[in-house]
Amino acid sequence: APCTVDADEYLTGKQVAERLGISRSGVEGLIRIGALHNHQAIEFAPWRIARSEVDSAEVRALVKVLKRTGRLPRGECLECQLSLTTPK
Image (tube, rainbow, N blue to C red; front, side):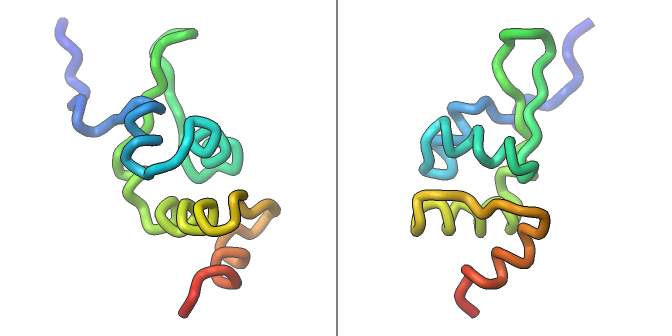
C-alpha cells in the first residue's frame, strides 16, 4: 500500500538546516534540547522532522538565539531563558 503520510508535512535534517539557515549540528542541538523531534522509519533512514515543529515560534526564537550567541540555551526552563534573551 502507498504511504499515506503527506511528504510536505515532514522535512529531512538537511532541509530543516536549510530552512532555518543553521548547520546540521544546530539542528542536532535543537533535537537534543527537545525543541525538535526526529523520527526514522528504520535505522540509518533519513530523519523526518515535522514541518509544524520547524515553523513553531519556539524553534524560531531558539534559532535567533543560536545565530546571535552561537549557542542554544541550556537548562530546564527554555521559555524562561528565551524570555530573558528575546527583546520585548
